[in-house]
Image (cartoon, rainbow, N blue to C red; front, top):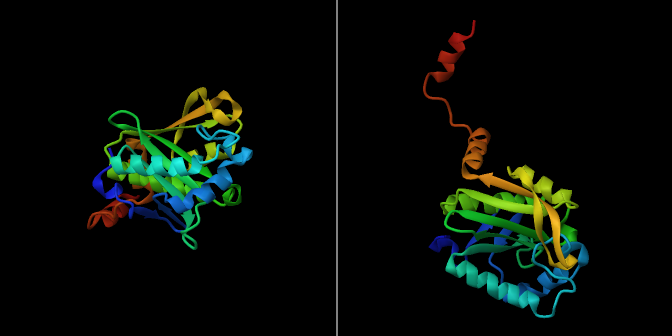
Length: 210
């Protein structure tokens, strides 16, 4: 699904404060450091607790393989000040021909700073720009309202509830489900960055005001 430009490990996304780049073998210690924390793992759909030895290395290998194949785009989150230190990860994975599923995780020291919203907005823009996806889906556990607010700030709409995986809790948990369509994303961009009026349009509208 993802084109050649995203399948090279020099690919990265830059925001005001963050760099989002391909994971490297050298990121494994930082990934393990936050993944082994229960307060992090409990809110994810894939991280088990306890975190098995070697899992970070396997995550890096699997992410790079999926990126290279174009099946997904998984990037580690770093600060622009220190792009060598991973403080989290964000990913979008293909679900069929035209849908993506979003996931993300941040280390506790990066919480409550707006980094999650910044990272999510960046990968959403890349996803709709680089692919033909018609929608991106995501889910957050009911007891994780902070992640729900992140998705809402990024334009996602709440579409219902259901059971989602929580390996750190040993099974499935009730979760909110969110969705962002390409049409909604495009409309929000147009509102945020309106096109300038055509020549004379501002004057013509002004003349219509009684």
